[in-house]
Image (cartoon, rainbow, N blue to C red; front, side):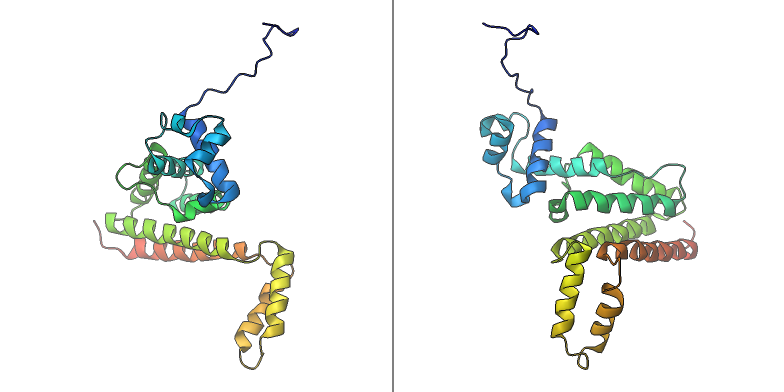
Length: 229
């Protein structure tokens, strides 16, 4: 076999297939084409292997999806032990939203309730632990976790369905809306569009931190008003 001056054979070595590589390729496909574009056959083509080879690393399609969700949870910043609970929850929520923005398909999937991955378990345990160690009762910690995550997922899903993304697209859509709306019939909608949405620098994503802070402020009041454990 002929070799090149560097001493190799000139044959391109195939990267060894493992579960991590399968998951990363699946996430890339879903990021690009949506979760609907992710099939075992398409994934095999992306990896350069027969689809059946993938089953050496994931049990089935559900296992693949659960692994992908666990990988997304692994991207989210965990609360730091030294942070005040509000700082920790705010930092974690902002990181969570950024992860969902990178992977919009993840808003429609849930982690496995019976067999969650290690990153998911570590994430959930750290969040609950941060709340419990900050004086939240078990019920209030559960309420807080639910309220914060419902807001994050809900905001991400709403943002995903918006027909505009850039400032220019937003302004164009707002102008179209204003041209169609009778001001006398819908005065407050017209007012909000003209005096808020059409203002320079407007971005729907900027609404997220304010809503998050309202939730955290409410949870702080509830923590102070709760009965002793």
